[in-house]
Image (tube, rainbow, N blue to C red; front, side):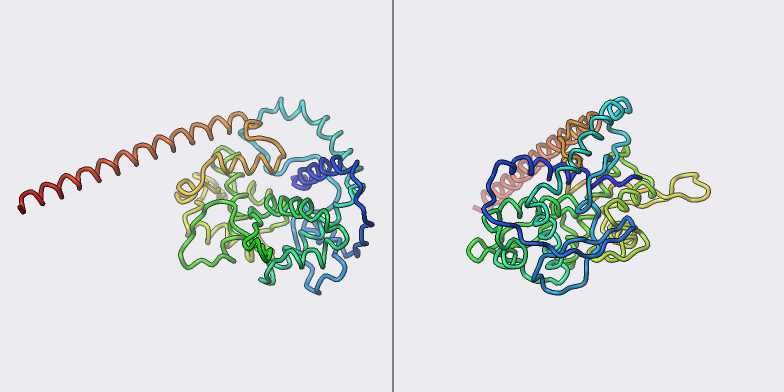
Length: 344
């Protein structure tokens, strides 16, 4: 599948660049050292902030580097029509070429990429994330644009890894990563383990939903490859991606991994597991997918309608559950009152 995630992130950067064209940055951007880049799909960061503490170069999704391409990431097989895709192709190609031209013109873009690199390094080394360190090692003279740079870097990480960066100490300005979805996992699962699994899980749930609620294994890995994640290659955040997908998340009941009936030679597919149905929703996942495509959930009509039906069913189930709980409470209250009366 052609590389596509970076197109959407670069589109966001292009719009930020357009808003910044008329602003006086007030300071000259510090030069950024050039690093090595790989010819494989799983590229390395090309830019490292000056004075950044020495650390092993991280392997990250293509979404965060290079010029934009013209393709989507999670191809909505069952959610868009072929006519819609054909009618928008020329417009997307033209827009992407303009994005490529404008990317290097944005004076904050390199700072955004460097900050993403810095934050992922902090996560890998399990070091605290502070505003002071971000300004000292990355933002530097552009500290007046700290909030804008941090917002854009956080957005990239959210889309690539399914996690939010939040300020946890507003006085000392400490930040931490949190899972994008309200997933519980097991009590023994540490926060460090939750975040990487959440990233893979969100992507997988999106692919499954957009492929008619069951996705061939090869389709899931095709999307993972776009994100720089490979089944047979250790990932600095996810560890062994195949084990996470086919064992860990299956054992936790967030995914189901089964052989396609009557397939010969055997082929396998992924489905949502019972805990995914219980702890997230099709609408939440569709919102995440839509954000990756820089659009809104209703841009995928059939999936949006299905998600709306799912939301309605969930609402009805909640009402029924509350009514049942209230009825049980009333019954217990009457029983208690009756027992007390007899005791008298």
